[in-house]
Length: 334
Length: 282
Image (tube, rainbow over all chains, first blue to last red; front, side):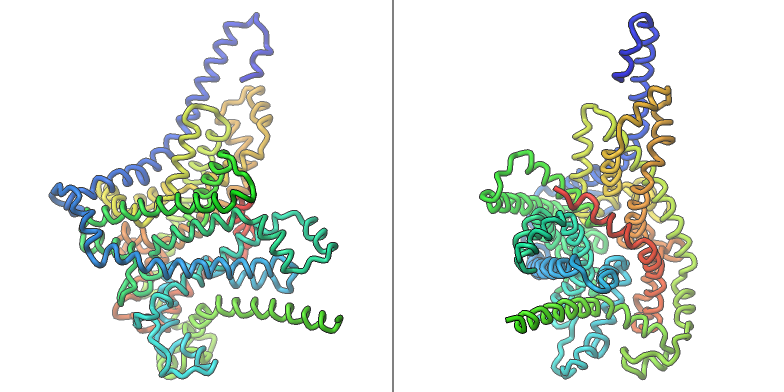
């Protein structure tokens, strides 16, 4: 390193040796520290990614002979009613995530000002995020059962049981019920993220605004909203891609019955129950392509919207891309 | 004018607390109803409304039965082994990788970072179609170590938490170590690792909650539910013939979420800051 040059020329040879060993050590440490994570990344992410692409051209099961069928699987994805059509259900999840974002932004704004018992409210609303998926499945099967929790609460509010639908069976409402559980699970977590973002706004801005006589709504509109613009954008992008890959609520609560099977639930069924690995792989590839397209389109859209507000250079866009990925990882919590 | 302002002010305060109370109620209602039901005896459960409070809050019969039926002793042991191994491995792997990526400049540094970032954009469920094939070929199915290794492979958040933390540790610390003739390993383990403690705690909590709650891969790769249940997958016991015995199921559900609750109560602040860290600025 740089400090080595100070030592002088008299010890040139030993210095050279020292440098060599130091450099050697450096390379050694780099390899030692990187080989395991890179191997894991390769084996569990990029190798399966490549394999999946390959599988999508075969008619195959996990075990046994494989037959090359070209693009047949892809054609099937678009022809079968249960495959591509399932993407329609994503619309429910998209609407749900917009509701969720608005709700958590509203609650975050309330909680970032002084509120009595704020931490307790925050804790209550956040806790659902920490419950495991299977437990959530049972909790909501129970919650929505005819005459059980939800119906009872609605009866307290004056509804008649006869007028209430079967929340998980009635096809006109069951997808909404499922989306509700997803909103229930994640709005608190979103709220915590937004509170963090709002808290990072310089407190002096609020004081100045107060002195100028700005009310809460004006503070929200002119201080909070602009300063958490980025995080909201990221959340919108993620929620749209997330809606396309909606999986958990139907998987754990209804197992995709009664018209609640989203694209991934059906893909899971095709892959692991029917063992049509090729078809499932083609489905996965198609959805990945759609997700990438959606992400790029949205980025262009937001870039267009913010063009007037601030001239974003290429650097900033790249930065946002990276943030998006990091953010996605954090939200996924894996 | 002032009276009107006062009315406005109180309306806002009312709305504020009403929203908070209402949504807190919505958030805990499903859980509370589960707790209520878990304390009911079989006959009580069948004869009373689900929201009627149990006769006795000391009726732990359901908890005992659920614990035994779902083999939760074994499940807690398995989950504990998985949790500890995954955390230890990913702390070492993650901090080491972050160290190299943050402290050394070499061609491919940026590429490696991007490879990890891009990986996060691939939906996990889609990937499992082919990961399953790889796990089969590696003979990792129905082995705890196979599941553990797979769980370590999907770790990207921690790496970013560590990299961010490294950025705030002055390089002069490393340099003084170099001056003293310390090897890179010594510098890393003796000087830097202790300083990373807050980041390690944060990422362990996040990763820990995620690992403890993971059920999808556990269900796929630990198929032998008698031998290898985790706490989350042990709840699958209640699918099928037991599927309508909600007093039992609720007890099982409550048992499964107790550890998460305890961790939440103890580490609330770290959980919040861990989620927020890095996703805020810029």
